[in-house]
Length: 281
Length: 307
Image: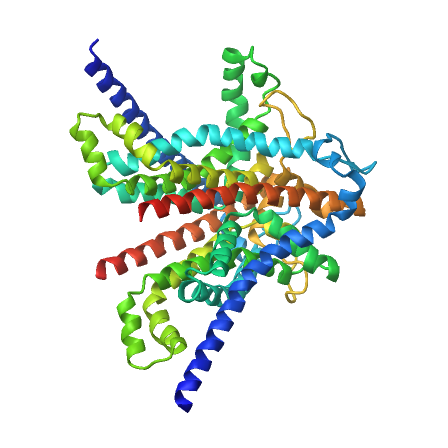
């Protein structure tokens, strides 16, 4: 066995292993999505979207309140986090590029993006739920907003930085003040990028469970406002999947199906937007 | 003159406004640490340092120690990295160097979509699909072939440390592989071509040029995945088994910090119990803080090195 042969052999072994790793990754994606689609689709019917949960063993239960609860809390979280995050992203991109404060906020935001979401849940429990002696939809929305905030801030910053300096210079040369340039020119050129970033952040928090476990809790009833414990798809999924009842497992698969489909749809959709935009420019 | 002054004031206000929102992020970050520290005082004062090394977790007698959840967190993370690092490097290599160009984008997107699936779906899939598979086929097989090792002993329950590690592996592969792919793509073409020109095989170019060139970025990617694995809650809670004992066997059920919090936080009665759980959360936050800081520093440096 010559040295050259041995080198070529080693090369082809490594390359084969690498290809197999990639195929394994794809296979796992197909396997998980296949199971979720297969089992989840069977659970989806009219009742799933319109009926309230029923006790275990009683047929015809649905997750209507949980679907509304998830939409409500995710929407509220977006209303808090999007303006907040956009403003702070604007600071980081326009003023805080190289000063210590900017670096610090960027560093902290990057850490918060990956920080354990359950700790955010504990934090919100301590500052909102415990003092008010009440689990509530507000607390859940607030926890989700904290998770969204650094994501929105960082994507806004990145998108603003992509705006070519010539556009800024042209606007400033015409005598526009900095703030007017930012909100009339820069935001507009970065709008589609910021929008996709926000959509991805919303998709991410819509699938979050851990921060809602001790903030929004869960409820089998329709909500009368956001000041009470609020049903949501992910916590219901958790409780039902951990229960010993088959019909609850079924509903849990249905919930998993709905969540996964929505999150993946947003992800694919935003990729298409970004790609068509890149092709045009 | 008047006009000019107004303009400047507008900019000062704008800058101050955006800066105050930016400082909001820093305030939240600091508030998390301060509030958790403050609220875990009862537990810190009662147990002191022994909290971190004690194995007892007894709500009835209010004796709490964090060793078992900490060990569970570290062990499942270690297992996940053990499987995920080679697989992710393989995937990154395939996406950056080997795959035909028309295949790279769809393949890369597919791997990134693995990261978009909510963690609770992984957990549920692990409990209902992977768990039974482990109990019926994988664990009996491992026991039959490698059963003389203490780590592969014990009963095949399906859920436990090994299954939790595998689910975590799946969850962190997309993070490590997509960052590593980007690192590989940043290696300057002339550097690679020079090595190919000397007669190197693809593997030799990867081993001697691409990996050394991107080592900081790869380290950052691994630590990013590690940070994710340490704090992952739902995927682990489903499959780890929630038991308070320490065993050599990877088949045994255990507990991680995050799964302990998920299971017990709403049920905690009594000040010491609750504040012990809060202290667990603080420990988790500080561990991930260190790991993620290292990840950021390495990723920044590798980005700076490129420029």
